[in-house]
Amino acid sequence: MRARVRQQGMAILGALIVIVIVVGLVTSIGMRASHSIAATARTFEARNADGVFESLEHDARRVLAEDGRKEPYDALNEAWAKVLLKTRRSDGQGEAHLRDAQGLFNLRDISFDADVVAQAGNAGAMPEPPLESPADGATQAAAGGEEAALGGGVGGALAPRPTLRPGATPPVAGPGAQRGAAQQGGDNMGMVALAAVPGVASSGAAGAAAGQGEEGLQLSPQQIAIARFALLLRNLDIDDAVLPAILDWMDTDTDERFPNGAEDDYYSRMKPPYRTANHALEDVSELKLIRGIDDKVFAKLKPFVTVLPGATPINVNTAPAEILMSLSPAMDRATANLVIEARKVRPFRSIAEFRALPMLLGRPLVSQGLTVSSEYFKLEMDVTSGQTVLAARALLARRDGDNVTLVSRDKGFFDE
Picture 1 (cartoon, one colour):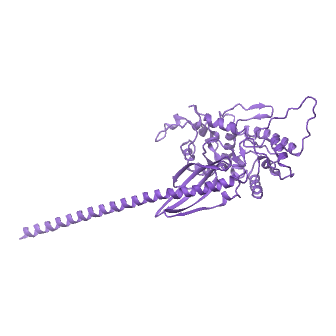
Picture 2 (cartoon, one colour):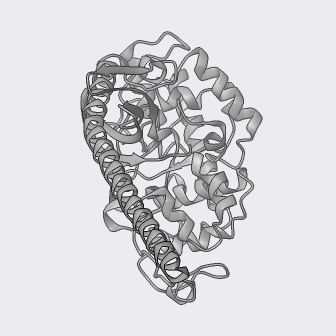
Picture 3 (tube, helix red, strand yellow):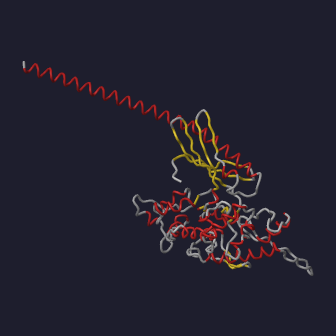
């Protein structure tokens, strides 16, 4: 009797175990099916979000094209900088806003890649379009003459001097030409000031042996960019010991700069080990791989740097105070803030106007590598499709006035 009761108990226990196993299997299968359905839904919604991204990009290209047909400068009081783009479709909705990518320091400007270095040199010879000077009410033609004397433009190259016939009387320099001579002197002083920035002379940049030409000391576009980047590090309270390691990361040799450089020998001892890139940065996040750049340093630097397809000048109409301060050792925060207030009243139509600001007169400042208009713009987008929320950043290029194209688009999570 007792054995029969035990057998019945074992049978009941066995049945309960089977039931538990079956219920577990059914639950597991149900959960997997649920997860699979949810994942499929998210994939479908993410695909739908592409249509919303494309719609926002279309609107952004239209806004930039319209702006390109109006004023030959780009400033923060224009429609492209203030408009909040919105779109609502059957497959989702989204918002986006534009930012000027050339208001930041482009890390490609300090690249050692031959094509980037050549591009920077060519950009330095591009003249600015002649614009009317509001200071003296000069005609556009007169302003163009002033611009030639000033040597404004993306690179601030001096225009060729006119040739006089034998016995001819040289023209009398008007106020514009006098200001141009003053600016040329400021450029010469600016070259000297940038050459004195620690790390520039030993950077190994193109034209590293600063030349002494007819106009005075001359630095290459790459040297100018390295000097400004070193000043940016100082303005952000970042130890400039990271500069040699950054340059080592991008140059093409395996020789470490003294005393804080880093090449394969250093990175091969990391866990996990890796090697130097030996070419231009592809993304800002790549900085975190470089010796001396920890999370704290990267957080300080990230808001003020970018990586664009090639060398680009800095737009003084959109640059924040920290970038303006990097243009010259003599540019302090108070002066940078005055420049920002001045451009709110009237954006700079030319580098000549920028250089003519009272607070900049007499300061050593190099026009090369500066501009008042931009080619590259970043579009920051947030899209909701069903239950899926996605963010994306697109890079747009505007060329020939109103020809705007999509350069790239990245999806993900962004903390800026």
